[in-house]
Image 1 (cartoon, rainbow, N blue to C red):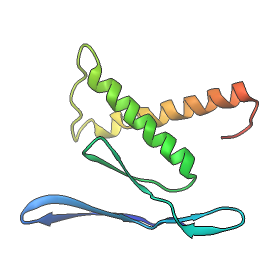
Image 2 (cartoon, one colour):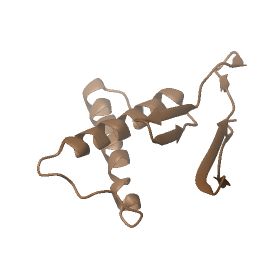
Image 3 (cartoon, helix red, strand yellow):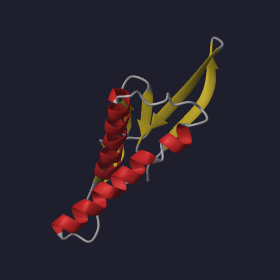
Length: 112
């Protein structure tokens, strides 16, 4: 089981988010407290991961690539706002799933 927690708070009147995770990773035979589940995209986006670590990291990397390409776009993309965040952040999971389907179809695997 993975534990990832995030909470909004204030620090000296400034808005903050506090996040924490466990380090537990388990396989078919053994487990241990050895897996970091807290990552960063750039300097200001925290990522808490759960489930299949390799898939979660791949999804995180897809978000990072998407945001990097968006930042380099010409003409520039509209800034991400509170109003557009949910819609913009729906795109990387679609890209991730598309990559996974492409991998399955070219490799012969039935699931990723």
